[in-house]
Image 1 (cartoon, one colour):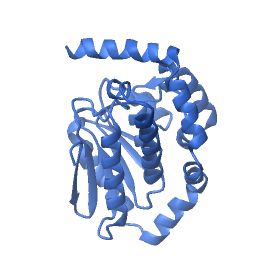
Image 2 (cartoon, helix red, strand yellow):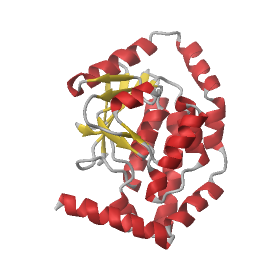
Image 3 (cartoon, rainbow, N blue to C red):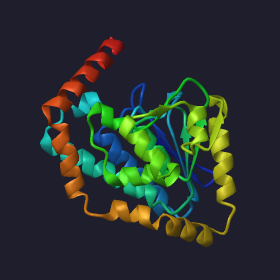
Length: 255
């Protein structure tokens, strides 16, 4: 694994995102996460999963700088893999907790809301889905995932406005469940997941999958039309212009 770190501690499988300063996601990182989630699900000794980032960043979402350079085949592979990762996380039968260690916009927020519980670091951080203002079409499956936690109305308005929330605001609307200092986030995540793993396993896991049945079905659908819609928008000159401006700003900040 080049872009994530994994280890098992006391029957809990840990995935730590580890790519650059902001953990921005590209194709290879997504593929590594798919492999790790499958490993956690298939290992009978693993009772739960904790997904975390590094200080100040859970993940900034999609790596726009890298994705901007992808050709059509690479973008097709990326979106197919990203939707598959979300399906693997949404349908993961064991308890899963996100330790949101900092900023978590766009794709970072999506990863977090796949899990059963979210602990977020306190601080001047943001979380939410801001794809629409960037010029990216949000698949219906991701809207359904957002709505699962926020309700249809709040999810609808927040998505179309591209709203980003501070930790306290996110907790108020149910986007995160707990806010703690960064140096306590791993212990808080572990405490929560240990609470969940104390329940009778079959009853808990079966109930989780039952409660998520409609959500899982959304990600099981043929995603070809959805991905084509996303990619058609991605290649529009207007979207490319927005992306180029964002990338220029990001590049200037790095230099």
